[in-house]
Image (cartoon, rainbow, N blue to C red; front, side, top):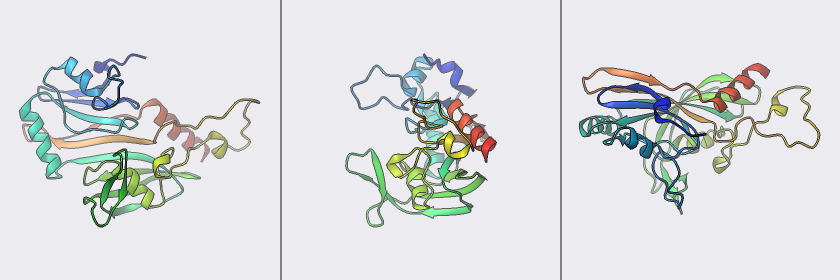
Length: 240
């Protein structure tokens, strides 16, 4: 299915475009040989030549992404990231039942070998902090709000692993898939068919971003759940 950039836009003014990034689309051009693949930056530049991404999301992660339309807007956003003056809220479905009430994980992170994953590194790691709140506990999983204070790669994922609450379907950090048969009583699968997980990617969504526009006005931009994440939450609600 061909994506159209216009369909992703949740807000636009003369300085910024806020989009709801779909899962499986890279933020930047990937360092792979598949240069023909879609990336957010390429779509954004086709829409507005001076577009620059204010931050990035992992390829599998969906959600709100801010794009600057001019250098002043980019600098203004970059400074807010640097001084930690903006608020990012993510929603994650994690394995296990957890009651997080403003719990802070303050553990330093460093990349491992090929840069595709990270680990907690108390000696050489960079400072990283995330705050977690339980939004809703289900029978075997929990919907968690994650507020990263810093912006390290895979920070939310590795910090949740440290809380023994890895994100559903995140094998890199110990997350297990969730199947309908696990949550629905008397579930019958048709013979000779393999059951697929309720979500086939890391169950993480960038739900909102709060920052100040160039005129100093602070605004919060929200990205509704994409279909796969919405279906997962709906099934968990239904059968818990």
